[in-house]
Length: 558
Ligand code: 5AD
Ligand code: SF4
Image (cartoon, protein in one colour):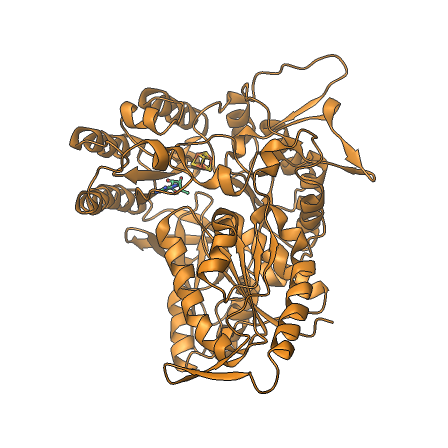
């Protein structure tokens, strides 16, 4: 039945980008056509994020806008996927009847069935409205009678992932979605995400993720290694492993369960540390360190292997040793501290102190920071300002932590109370919006200086740059010259290939390219006219750095 066009817009994190890519692949295989033009689509899907209210506000405003279109095109199907669907549930449909489909992040494998159902239901709603009752006038606009009735097709996990006791229940059909991934190097321009765990068991008091993505489950290592090998065979050069607490990966083979010959993902256990091998007779464990080594050794076509996001507890030396001894694993860690105050960290339920956090950074630098060999360790962080009860002294401690950590970049967020979390229910949000804003700006200024210092220290060096495509500047220029005709968003990252091709087709003279170092610093350089820009994309090339600003290094191809 498909032969319908779908517009899929993604909000939020890398996990969502991967989800969108898998959804897009699944729908394309069924005959849907993806488009970058929302106005031309028969089905409009928003893959949403609930981590902060700002992300939800953007989706609410999209839903407000699309309501106007549906008034005139009542056959249009609108779907909300991801965390906001899971968190708001059917309330979202009550508030926004324009929404026909709700699909939580743990139910995405069910989306094709839901869409099919929604398309048919909408068709019959439109037909039932009857010829005479079709049109009414509202505020001077024509509104189809059926437009304000939702098809109401819903798949949410509720609390089921935490209630279910069987190991298989949490993941089997969702695992098939990852397993059925279609791989096209053109779509990715050489870079891809691979999920290793889903969900989170940490329950930081401010965070909605354990409530929306459910309990932590770990994918079988063979599935992950096979996916990496398939990606490498298809020409993928860079793989980023994804997990909310990626270093907690652990798979116990003795207790793995198979359904129809497919090994099932496994629920996370109380974590005992990856270096702590509590193995019983007849049982074998794949730790995160083992998994990294297997991917590195068994998929040598992957020239860059990195992983996000690390949790600052239980990060064993075994992982650092594998990173040190594996030339294709990047010297890069994204390891959020969230606060520099022990009191705030305790209220956040983070489970470590500032001293323990900094001890880990020292240990990581001891193993991995080798600037003299051209392999400095680059760190990235996340910080929250204005969390419940944060005093000026707590905030000063966060500044101090930034100065000691010396991240190459740090994402800084104002605390956003999220309904359903412990902090929302039990701890007063008592820092004013003005103080949150000021603290955010002050912390950004501290980080700005640190980032600039790190970038400047690389001027004169030769960096090995993984080329991703034309630079942002080049894209904007092409888009302006083309009256906005070049589409920049079609589901996940699958738009990259076509955008690069479209820009390069129109370019004349030297094209500005962009890529990233092993430590994830952005590098911009001109492709000389003697070289093919298309040929550089997806490759690692040497670039001599000539100058730097806070977030970007500028150089020349060596
Ligand atoms: N308010 C502000 N920032 C948050 N984060 C998670 N939840 C919240 C919240 N309620 C931040 C954390 C996390 C990142 C993904 O988002 O810093 O690491
Ligand atoms: Fe949220 Fe904490 Fe889990 Fe990260 S570790 S996803 S901040 S609950």
